[in-house]
Length: 105
Length: 105
Image (tube, rainbow over all chains, first blue to last red; front, side, top):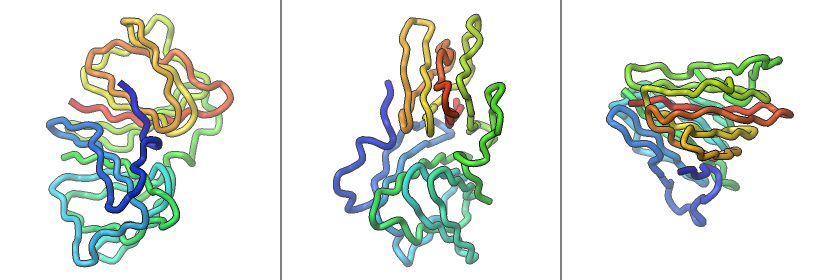
């Protein structure tokens, strides 16, 4: 019935790992674990739903197509409106970065 | 555009503090800060929507009416189905406990 977001991390994070925690009609909650990963340089996320994201551990930088870059550490949270084109340009290379994302419309 | 869940904690937590982070048609995300608080002994939460909750900091114990008690520390998460009667029976008296709750249907 319970589980821990900060334990049971994948041992070797070769790609970003996504785990779905809640999947309901109107909301998805997922854990994302990255380790020095960035989104593909050529690709922007363009999502049909809003996303609220918080960093639980580690550090990352999210860039928006309009130029803004936002650095996030533990506890920092951010709303990404639907269709706001964005990508992760950096995550800490020396540790796992654990994100919690809530997708909703 | 960003804010931090673990900073800007209320200075004196006399009652549990609820801060709404996301309020949309089908989902509410809130931060709850407690400091040695428990739900009123006589009262059970009986919520019309499902709740997914994670402890970000501190410790708490959630009890269900059917008898189960679940201790949660940082990173531990729990789904509380709609109308599952539950209450918080204990939170750490010596530190703030920060919960993140997602209510959805």
